[in-house]
Length: 403
Image 1 (tube, helix red, strand yellow):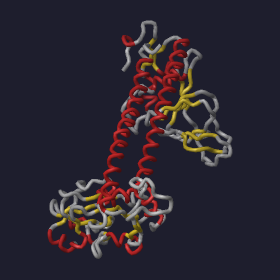
Image 2 (cartoon, helix red, strand yellow; image 1 turned 60 degrees about the horizontal axis):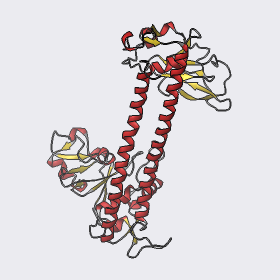
Image 3 (cartoon, one colour; image 1 turned 45 degrees about the vertical axis):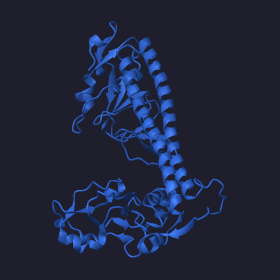
Image 4 (cartoon, helix red, strand yellow; image 1 turned 180 degrees about the vertical axis):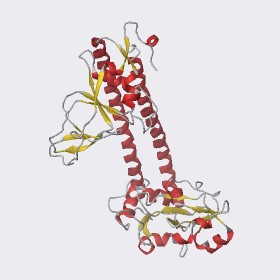
């Protein structure tokens, strides 16, 4: 908490409610909203985002501006300088008491306050209104606000460039996979519409083992909670495929149940695929040290013909946006997509090169994706640093060290 010793000598230390009055939204302002955008009045609701939508209702618009919106439960704040309507009584509308206060100065100071929240507490009345705020003269307030916004603008520009680079990396990854599985990564002179030498389209039924290559998990009734034991054969779940993590999970069955469900067992180098929901099509390869076990009803097991296709080539191809789109396009269900039936799934084709070229493609992809991963890490670190720098700017501002 800030104290008199940490601010310039001529600054004053006051309480927030000495500079701000609050208006509690009334039933006149809080009313049913027609969320059309014909009138374009923003509707603010409680929470971190505040703008819930737009309304064509003209009554109950608050236009005595500018103000600070304060969520009384989460302590989120928003500086507002446009007409709006309020959707939640959990919000306070904060206005300056005098012309000697720059409201943005107060708003930026409130961004430095970090009070643990309790959803049963009204924070403006009980806590925030009594917190100290360092107050310089109005010209200094204006100068500090101007400097903060200049630096924040530069930070926002840098952040936008980082986000753009992040998006470009994502596009590059997918483009790389597309080129690779069209043969253009290892065949520079291949003509549009032609297949590279030795490449051919094969259906999934052609590159998987005949009877056990594609196997959906058992009916849900086959694996009930009463069958689980503290240790034994692992029950692989959707989360293993979704998170590409074969080691997670806590459900096991005994030897008798495992033998009963042996047709759904998994071995090292098997591939497991998520079969439903927005994570449909997520795939995971089981490593050599994976625990023996079975798949549950939400998974598909894939066993490939090693002489035709490499696991790594298949997994990279399977994860490509172009192949994932095919899976979703053929999925069943509307509210929750589900993998198409095995009979139809077997008919999906892939463009397959000779084994030696598959090895070259995998090596080339992994090398380039490794570079992309390092760039991604650097971008993520820089994005974190922009937020750290933002807080540092505010800290210096309210210690009188920014200007």
